[in-house]
Image (cartoon, rainbow, N blue to C red; front, side, top):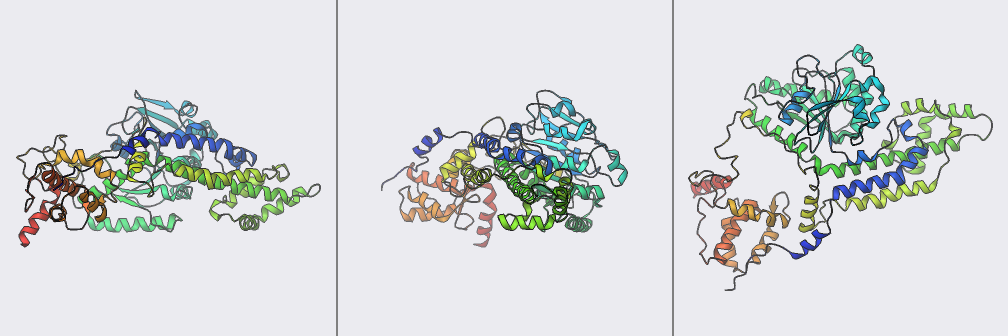
Length: 565
């Protein structure tokens, strides 16, 4: 019988790789070019920065790392959560049951530990905070940077905010508009985390106002119910339900917010009633944070598209208002009439140009700003600029999206695109904490050993561990979906070995341990081991797998089958 060695690669991949650049950098450069040439001129022409209270974008904002914004009332554990992520204290850290964080703190990576005053931070040429100058010295004196060497901060920037209290006194005494500052950070954040204390679920007026400013960013928001280990299971169910009810009344989005439940700091759980739940919730949250760098390019594209749609809408509104103005007499009277009739103006523009209601500015703040300007001084409409924006949305942005991983990719191109996202100084994933002992579990001996378990550890030792490391790239190149090779793909792989159908039938029965008709990675490794034993070493196919060959995660299935036999 002819024996062919299983193919593990394709030379075309090497040729494709030669022309592959860092796609994240390419996308950022292209977005900067699009903004400067097609978007910025229209923003200046129609005063976008004035009407939307959003300053013009700078190049450094397109190149910046993903930002994570933390918001919550005082003593909910924002600063402790940051300390847990970093695995250490940071300069300027203040933790306590009283309102301790009295300023906005940006945590950035750097060679040494130091704090950077807000005024200096806002003019730093390599950091995207110049837009904060508009909030004045009173805010900048309560804004600081905390620099420290950190593997986490190499990938993301964290923003800690002052704890929110209830009452008018705090709002008046801040000396700056808190909600406007939060809105500025929210526009630029990749993830917004709202923290709640299991013992303090009341949502104060200022917190409600802050959440209201997050409208339009619902896709970025994640909620944390912190300190949940200090209540029992029955109380947790009631508290969780109460929080969802409060959020439902506060957030305008019809979708239910994702709420992570647990105790997000380094200390062991107070009670172990819900330890398994808290561990799973923490892993889910950490997974959300870990993939931020990989999603950064998509987020930048998404934010620019949102901005372009708003710019386009503003241009049509301003042009409509200018067109209604008389050429000589009665300008002030007509302006007041248009402002008072603004809802009908919006409806007219929306229908005429087929725009989306969500792209229009807030009608109340927009009308107030209109009263401060003269319609007759507005710039005239230019159709070419609108055509340029349409070309960006319909052609240039879709071309950029082609550089990102999609279902159209072959396994080879998908692998290269995913690898390209990790090129450069910023890793593709954020290194985040894993703490088995926190959840009352001890690390298994040798679990953290990079060389695996010893052969005498019959429960954990897997004789194919070295083979699995070699075969991982081959498995990924086959395009598994959700971690599984479908039946047809796995069949095609086995058919290429040149073995007879009878031999392949035996190998499939031994390898598909859970009998689901698919190969996960471990089952694929077992199948390749059996193929190699027959093809390369002329060994007979065993009637059953030796225990050392069965993946440790699937040995319970083997035991169950044996007990049923």
